[in-house]
Length: 249
Ligand SMILES: NC(=O)c1ccc[n+]([C@@H]2O[C@H](COP(=O)([O-])OP(=O)(O)OC[C@H]3O[C@@H](n4cnc5c(N)ncnc54)[C@H](OP(=O)(O)O)[C@@H]3O)[C@@H](O)[C@H]2O)c1
Image (cartoon, rainbow, N blue to C red; front, side, top):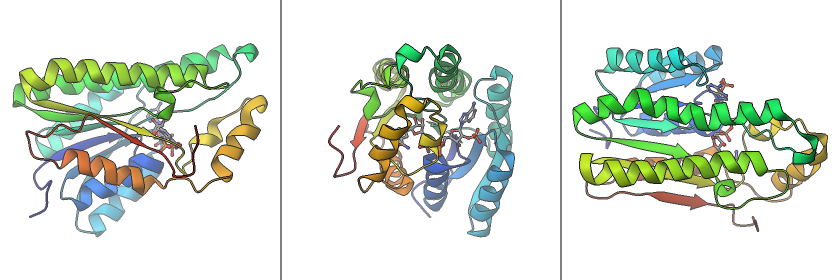
């Protein structure tokens, strides 16, 4: 029997990068994993890989900006595996840009995915955790949730917001309901995330940040998430800040 046998984890943004690596890591630890993101083909491929390796997985195409879709994700997870013990709010985008370029649609999109997406995921999962008497919520913030840098005003605002939300969840839910909360704050990780930067004024500096150092791998972050969610019930890992050794910011 593995550490998470019998537990079910819902992971948003599981079609690539940190979410996909986390799904593999938690499945390796014995969890039933429910994979959510928009790219259904990627989810199905990952689901098949996990099942071939002897794990339990289900995929549910989900856009976290769509409230009904998130509700359906939670319902599907409960129906398939009987409950939700771990929620990993990982889906995110990073449309870095200079504020002077006023890319308002990108600003709003970042808030809708990175902040409202977390609110929706928690809102639809929490009632079930409360009635089952526990659970674990993991939220992906970032070094950008601790430091603001040029080009990052909006992205940083979203990552500060979810860090604050997670601390509020912890303060209210952990002592009273035994629901643990962990904020993960990675530095640069080799994923598809930087490809979403469309503002030419910041593309070069983003490329430099990711190319001029040995960045983290998605598996490094997945290992931290696995660590946080496999601690004994009285241990609450609240915050994990992980930078590449060479990252100065
Ligand atoms: N990479 C880094 O350097 C780094 C550093 C700090 C924090 N983070 C955070 O880590 C998290 C994961 O990012 P990553 O680095 O693994 O990047 P990634 O490979 O681009 O993964 C992002 C994931 O989010 C999903 N996603 C985006 N919009 C979505 C939506 N509307 N609905 C549902 N899913 C959506 C994507 O799937 P679909 O496109 O298939 O929907 C994808 O699975 C993000 O919250 C990011 O801010 C990353």
